[in-house]
Length: 97
Image (cartoon, rainbow, N blue to C red; front, side):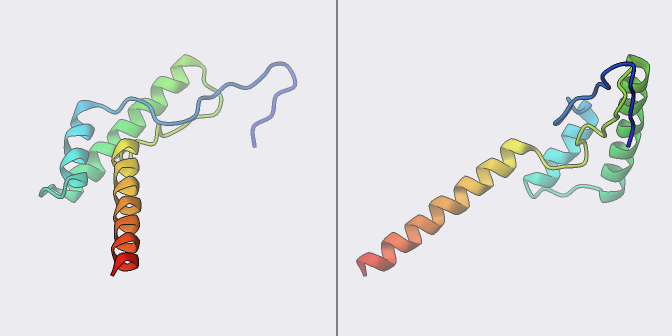
């Protein structure tokens, strides 16, 4: 763990803006379209390397991958809401039967 007694270490949390090339292929993956897994892995790896370099140049002390490899939050949230609604509908229909 990094420590410093002279100043407060800086970082950020959460997702950083993904490069368009990563967004494009991740959208295809998340929507169930065909995509190249190796291409996605390569784009994420290169993009993480670049964003870590930018953080280093900016003086960020505790570096992050920007959550580039994780699914989009809004897609996860929508899927979660959809599952919750579906469960409620199933319970309601079985209760009325």
